[in-house]
Amino acid sequence: MIGTRYTEELINSYVSQGLWDPDLLINDLIDRCVLHYPDEEAVVDAGMRLTWREASQRIDRIARGLLELGFKKDEVLATQLYNCVEYFLLFFACEKAGVVMATSQPTFRQAEMEPILRQTGAKGIVIPYNFRNFDYFAMAKELQARQPWMEHIIVIGDEVPEGALSLKEMMSLEAADGVKLPQVRFKPFEVTRIFNTSGTTGTPKCIERPVAPRILTGKVLVQRLGLRHDDILAAGWNLAAGGSELLCNVSVPWVGCKMINIEQFKPQLVCELLEREKVSVLAAVPAELVRLVDYPDLDKYDFSSLRMIFTGTQLLTPELGARAEERLGCPMVIIFGSGDTGPICTTTFGDPPEVRLRTVGRPVDGNVVKIVDSVGNIVPT
Image (cartoon, rainbow, N blue to C red; front, top):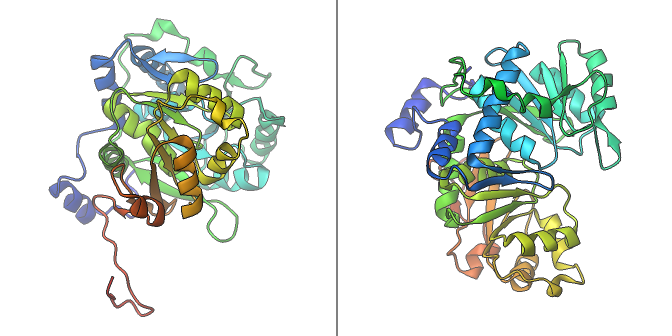
């Protein structure tokens, strides 16, 4: 399915400029990593560490599992997950199975999840059983009763309640290894992801996203952040948000570096993780950075491996940015955009402080930015 905004004229324009690749999918980047770095760690969380080869095997198993459950091309699988290995695997498994992935924040409850499930017509949902003292399964059952088209509730982790399917079992079916997946491959201009935005009313609205522009932005982030194969990236910023997902699930396989999931942003746990794992890039929103730089024991930890902080979603005041750079000993890179538009601008790793901390940088490749007056006339910079 090609989204209504993506006309043939627009697609041809971006392809002819060399901005969109007419053949490349994000899973092709995973395949490259398996070829070049099969036994290096790819994705980590508190309970799981997978190499690129192991991640690829589990991606294939989940993709087959979705097809065996009856998912057809362009049908929707909703997810409501905290940052975890399973999110990373599902992101790629859905693309391989031709299933559209619709994400949502783990803080959403019935009032937000019901319109998302209704708008997308999701055939299933992937959730934790319980997380941070909330019963996601009970909420999913309640919503399923009002939306009978949602056939499957899939639960991550070891504890799976009656009436749910186990994602862990799905990605443990080794007998399927080596069996070629059916040809359900998306085209780079087809919609593979559905984001949501609250807009101005508070009720989430859904936004379709194809692969090609996300691959482009992932590549741009690699260049502007100077992301390297030997980087170790920690994701505190929830992966259901556009900027974090682009960096962690698109830029990471561009270079084959390691990605570590932070399930809950608790300052002490984050400090321990940064020191233990020798993290070089931290993705965190300003609200998380406030908690980190205010942590009274911050100076007890060794952050010498940290070379960059990646942030977005809300205003980063120059004061907070300068304080975070001073206390953590590395520069800040900002991404600016919205759920509706996607990324618009970013700063870069090499920008001077006045650009890093007082602007939102330069337009992402392929974007055109104009400054206009109230009637649409272009005005001077």
